[in-house]
Image (cartoon, rainbow, N blue to C red):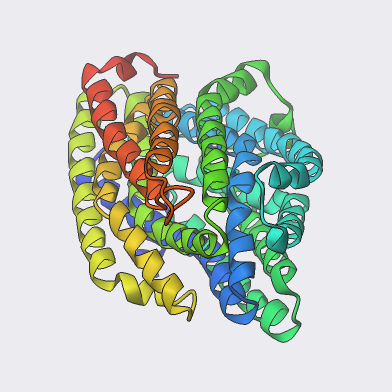
Length: 458
């Protein structure tokens, strides 16, 4: 019983062997991220098998718009995680309590804003992207339900980010596993039994996210040994609010520009027809799992760097950065091999259409080695963010997305036009993504070695 309790205790990453602390913190978060990815994957598997390939395309086409309109949550979550980890490392209880209370209030305000604005602009955005008539109504209803019920998504992401900043990645994992199980059961009930189609998938996701958010809130309310969660701390304080926004805004902008670029590329994707849209959905679902270790190590490095920067232990930050990045690269190498070996079987989970399976496998093969490059980018960007430098990773992401990915995608499409491929070669979508990942790793490594991030502590 004592051993189980230890897993749920906050992890102090300012002491002990760096790589052991990083791995101990990353593993439950990785499992949690995989579970979270199951939300979208189960949605795709269920609609692909019970409704059809067009429904699968509809769920996928909604993705870029969903990501664009939740950037406020991303920004608050990043700002919260950095401040919480640094104040936790510095053992400043009052500052920690105020930060957490202000994050909760900011999340509530952001949720109301997103519910109203996103619901109004979803349909016009889908029309702007030339979403095929055969799937646009499904896309719109799917998005509308998710935006109206966005409070669960918002509060889970922010509250779980706070828990990770405090070194508790296990609780967020357990709560996410519970909600994932709820999501899977409700998907099958709403779609397979009640024949609710795409709407049923969206409703199941909303209910599951609300459950995970409530569980995170109950856990934080019990952590009285670290901070106080009283009504007084919910009142917005200028110092903390500005700092949360200042730290989180670059990440929010990054997510917004990345999502806008995805929308621009989605327009190109839509021009290749429903079959390619469905293939793109399948690839992005597999990609979500393949990228999970990189995102998990990146988040772990943010918490690790934040706590150690708060404690002014910069040598330890650099030692952990080397060890964490090496482990992340090794993990991605293994995953890349598995994708190349078992690609066809993975794609076959989503659809029984042979042409769609083959197309998806071929396109996925283009991306495979890029995951190793992303291990470098995510780990070292995590270190810079944890130290308080969220601006440098923002500029790197903007450069690789806007100046590399989009021009390469449209450039290849333009120069490969032919009677057989009037819109250009479909491979342009994934070659451009691979190029942006590789250049991103090189640029991130350069800026990390410059060391300017050491000057940015909260």
